[in-house]
Image (cartoon, rainbow, N blue to C red; front, side, top):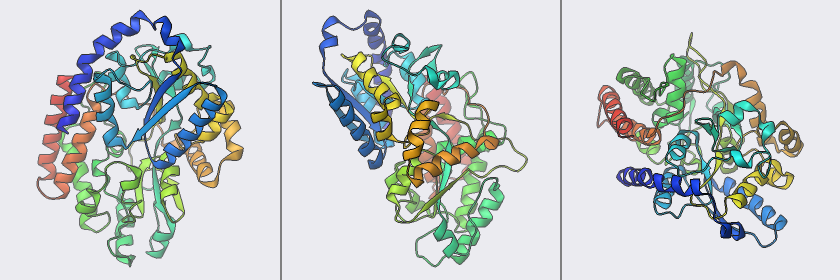
Length: 429
């Protein structure tokens, strides 16, 4: 974590220089650059699809070369921060909603408005999808897919344990009862109904929203308190004690990547993820998976929301921003590109592209698209934009959840510490 904090402070300091260079525009020689770099996080399934799209782009653009690299979520952001600070950032950056505002406001990525209607043909994405990728009225991201949170589960494992899996509308109390029933009927060793999602920030956020709270308010301040966090830790502690979710040592193996999740490791029959990750999760699973929504809070509010699964952003230090934009556009609007990516990064924002890819989707992809289509009753508006430091707070939540799970701190102390550390991070900006 300390390396991440150092790298983040470095990128913030370096951002001003990038902003200045971006304002000067690209030098004339930059237009002759024929090689760019692209960097993303994700599973091997994503890497395979992305590289296939890149190969199609190179085939359609003679003389162009694209160097690609990928990493898991936890490793991606420290590596990207280091590269940005060293003025060696990739041209095409896969961006997440929680980091978009920080990178944009520090000048590490460039606004894309000047490319709209030219090399960037995404007007049919619609205003909501364009707004969700914008900062202070300027477009900084290219939506790679509409997404929301989801639950993936092994239906056969639940059936074998004689338990009913959660479905749309299952509340948290019934979810706990179902997991406890799974534990009683399960015959497999070191195998549990669910992962422990107490350290998964999207899960915590959704649960808070159901309680009428949020992670952050419109001013970028924490919108929950220590009691909320303690209640969250206690809920998962009770489930852990009942044998309904994995033990602390198993959950500690999860590095926030699909291939290290308890579901992929064969330690749990259910996992909390983003809908687009369902495709990668199925690729890692030896059995057929099903998809449904998060449990609901009885009498509560809808917790889900639609968001850009990921975005493409262009580095302010890119020597070939036009070429990077062209590659990004290729992956979201050109048939060869969008078919290569499929819906692994989410449901395409363009209606025309959705119609293009749907007939060729495999069963797993169709399950995911169908899920997004049924989610409307559980969806509320997009939350306020996350403040600078939100990404770090997510890692603090993960660390403290493990400390609570291992018994080195109490839920109450964990909740208090989360507030203290989060406020310190946000104050530092």
